[in-house]
Amino acid sequence: MTRVFSDTEAIIEELQTPDAPLQISCSPSFALHWLTPRLADFNARHPHVPVRLVAELQDLDCEELA
Image (cartoon, rainbow, N blue to C red):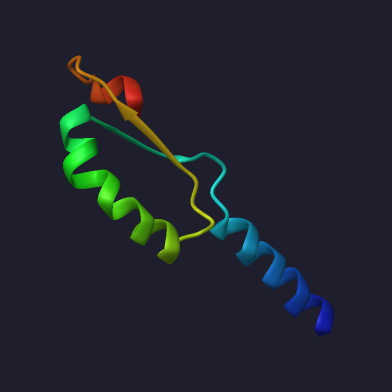
């Protein structure tokens, strides 16, 4: 029975660890004035979630980012 719990714990831990970073694409102004000040709080609450911030002036293609 101990092995079952150990295996279950390993599976849960694997599922909770993201394979890819959370990618956030936005304008530089939004990133600077709204998003960046809040990222520290997000990182404190979710330390195992890597974040990739893309701040660009060009139009974003949401289908391409998916």
